[in-house]
Image (cartoon, rainbow, N blue to C red; front, side):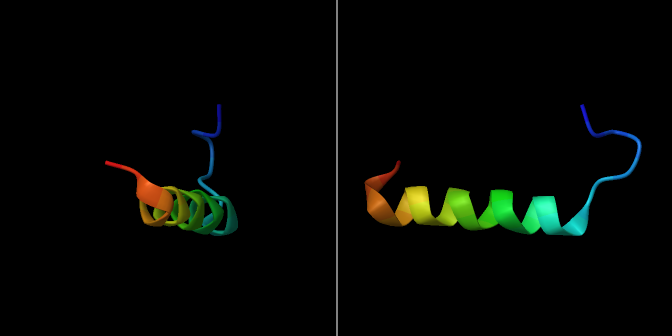
Length: 27
């Protein structure tokens, strides 16, 4: 979907969401 230019902001948001999910009690 975004292979033309990976936005740094989008990556940061995705990383933050993944960390929050893991903190909530993810495997």
